[in-house]
Image (cartoon, rainbow, N blue to C red):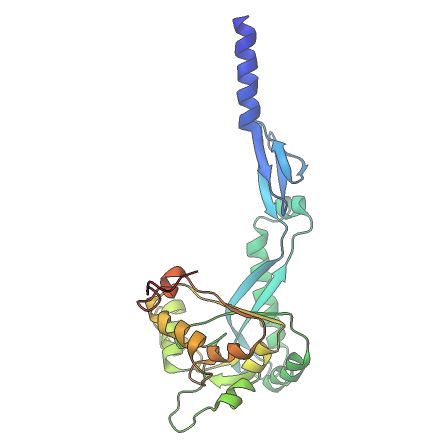
Length: 276
């Protein structure tokens, strides 16, 4: 009797230890003794410890931020380009079995393709595509916002004798723009070990016209007390060219995201205010 009780208890413990949850937006790839043994659908599934293992695969659409790439056009002009790509895994087993790291492979393929495309056209041909970008429908504009309230690197020029007006900023399109000195220094410290001479003095950037033409605009930022001012200017100031974020007030569906540390401020700590 005791043996039966012990076996039953061990079986219950084994079953409980074998339960794995696969969420609705995931699939699980199961391996038995190291061999592929099937794909697990969403729900509670059994994976026997020691003998079986599994890996989850997220089937949702993923957004990958392709970092800045140095590329040379067909007419030997150095440009800096970046992009955002979207992908979705359709075959969970192939993504795990046939590719070592499909996320990394997708990012590397995008970088290589972007450099190859830029290398096949002249600078004039590269910039001539901005009209097609401006006229084409954009569902979602996704980017970051920084210290000075710029959106997706749409900082206005800081030359004292070449001021940029508000409407000029709002109508700006994809262009070659001179990099500000602080941008060059930041990229040098981030990428080239502070060797600023390797940072290109100019770069290709989207304009606010393309950003604001999207049906939805989503901008985000990491934490930083130095961004508290930029956030409050974007929310409460009238639109000004010094802070391109203020132009988001004109968009019908724009969402600005910040961390709790950035959102907190002595003003927001007023007892009559509620920090959401």
